[in-house]
Image (cartoon, rainbow, N blue to C red; front, side):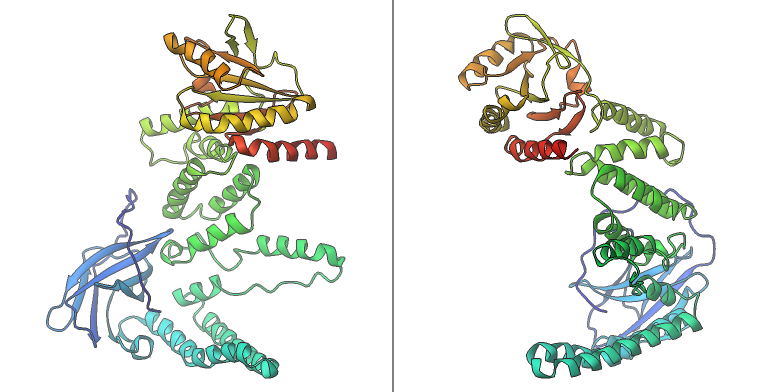
Length: 469
């Protein structure tokens, strides 16, 4: 209940209207606290933020404002260690007082004018009463293996007791904030799927768990964003319950956004979050998620908070990324060899074609080139060709050819575009070097933006998958 806490210094820029209503006033009294400053914080999305700071006055800390606070789990943050205490704030219960003894917070907590917090702390007290014995039993199960089953049975009874306590809250106070928090963390009743062969049961349980993961947590509830739970559940759903491939991630994100379509605050936050995460992702192919989000939401007018100039930039970036998404046929561009002969990407006939964009002065290119040479020597007899495109332009083009021979790169096809006539840097999004793409026989992009040392294991996987098909 009380733990170390570090605040983010970044504030969420809110563009929606504030809640209409009366002022809030929260009076706090502490025992066994010598400080004179108290802060009020709150959860929002994946972070925590400061809302207010107040000083001790006549033995009390008082937070107050002219507009109601958004409903949520708030934090009484105690400098200088930033320890914090949870307090629930709900609509219509924003003028209340509370008192704590910092030596026994849950047991001592007393509220006036906040039935929500009475429910919450009564629930916490019941858990606290059972925690010492539960912790002791877990330790005994490790230290005393002879009686492990006895301890396990007693621990199971405590677990059942806790479930009953939770069930009582859900039944008696179904609309309370405490009920929302309990339901969001409840274990799922999983069918045993005994009618299926044993080999299929784990897959069936995974599918059931994923399909019912949000049965007891409503992301359209305005309290969800400040619960401290919502982001954890979203992150778990995307990272642990969804395949880490662009198509699956896009479908999952659409599903999540649909479950908060009546909560504009959450919808805006998470649409922005998902777009930023896809842009920052180091996982190959996630630019397809970026393009999907721009196409389905931003370009369709579902992000009304965006300024036109920003929106136009997002759409332009999506158009830049679109031609080289994994699975797309690589744009066919023509380059010139050292002797002036033309060579085009689609004109090179091979089972696989590796595009290697490089710069003679690029340190990473120098480190990657030996790996690519070794890869080519190992795979050239297996239908692999390399087209190395030097990114130097103008009079500097001569360094392409001299470096090519010096580094032993004259074993494959080398070319350049001295005057950037084919716009390959924008079409292939070559902002930095090296950049490596692998194309199949039809010139579809299989993988991209990988390291030279990864060529061999990736090509082995590609060939293996092709043989299975």
